[in-house]
Image (cartoon, rainbow, N blue to C red):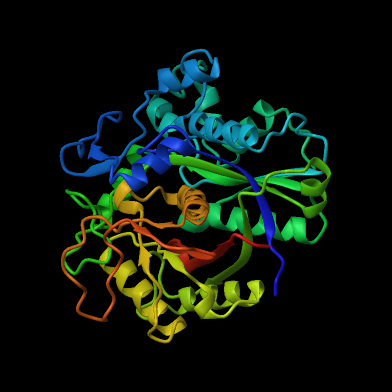
Amino acid sequence: MGKGIAITGMGVISAIGNNVEENYRSLVSNTIGITKISHIDTVHKNDIMVGEVSATNSELEAQLGLSPDSWSRTSLLAVIAAKEAIANAGIEDINAFKTGLISGTTVGGMDKSEQYFYEYFENDKTWHHINGLHAGDSTQKIATELGMEASFTTTISTACSSAANAIMLGARMIKSGRLDRVIVGGADCLSKFTINGFKTLMILSDTYNTPFDDDRKGLNLGESAAYLVLESDAVVAKENKKVLGYVKGYGNANDAFHQTASSDHGDGAVLAMKQALKVAGLSTDAVDYINAHGTATPNNDLSEGRAMVRVFDGKVPEFSSTKAFTGHTLATAGAIEAVYSVLALQNNVIYPNLNFKTPMQEFDLLPQTELKQKELQVVLSNSFGFGGNCTTLLFSKQA
C-alpha cells in the first residue's frame, strides 16, 4: 500500500468564510456564498452571479498591514490563507527544515494590471501592478511574507487543476526526499478578463449553479485562496506534530481533446483517477466519498459522470460538488477542495450537492443532496482544467 504524506496545516479564505473554521461551518449549514457582483465594475454585474470574498481590498490590506493599493487581490488572498496554514501547522521557524512553496494561479495580478493598463504610458506610479501581472508574483509575495529562504519555490498554472497539481508535486518532492516540508495550494481573484472570457464561452450561469442537474446552465465564477502544509514523517516525528490527514495518492493525465472542453467520455479523468488509486495502492471500493469537480457546465458534469461510472464500474460512491457553495474558484479549486476533503475526513461528513433537482438523463447517478454523517477513511477529489489537464487527489486518515 502506498505511504501517504502528512498534512499538518490548512488555511483558506473564500466566499463562504475567512478561515478554515468559517468555511466548515458554512458547508455544514448550507450557507452559500453566491451573490451578484459587488467588487468589480463590469457591464456584466447584473447578468451573472459569482462567489466573492466579502472583504474589500482595503480591508484585506489593513489585515496584512499594507499601504493602500499595494498588491493584487490574488496576492492579498494568497498571503492570508498561507499565513493561516503556517499558524495552523504550529510552524515557528519556516526555515528549520528544507522547505518549499508551490502555488497555483491562473489570474495572477490581472485584476490590477487591467485596472491600470491604460495609464502605463502616462506615469510610472502604477507600474508595480503591471509588473505584478505574471503568475509568479503572488508566489514571490507569499515567500517574502513568510520569511522563506526556500529550498524550492515555483508556480503552477494548469488552469483549474493548478492547485491540485501543486499538491501533487509537493507530495512527490517530499516522498523523493527533495523537501522536508512544503506549502502547497493556490489563489485566484475575480477579474474582468476572466468574467469576459467565460462569458464569451457561454458557460456562466445567471443564477445559482446546479452541479449534476439535467437543467444545469453553467458555472458561477468564484475567488479564493487555500494552502496546505505537507511534512515528511521525519519532521512529524521530530516535532511531534498533529496530523490532519494524508495525501494518499495522486494522478495527472491529459485527454488532449479540446482547448476548453473535456472529452465526451472523460478519458483524461479516467486515467487520472486510476493513476491516483494505483499510487495509493487502493482499490475502488476503498473510496468512501468523491468530492467531484462538478462545475455545473453541460460538458464537465457529463464527462466527469461518465468517467466515474467507468472507473467505479457503475458502483460510484457517494459524491457531491461543493462549487454550489463557493463558485468555481479556478486555479484554487484543487486546494480549497483539498481542505474540504480533509475536513470531511476529520468530521466524517459528506457535504450536500446543493440546488440539485433533476437527474441527468445520460446515466443513473444521483449526488448526495443532504449533509450526511458517515465514517470516512478515504476521499477522492477531482480537479479538471482547460487544455484537458485532469488531476485526481486521494486523501486519507491513515498513512
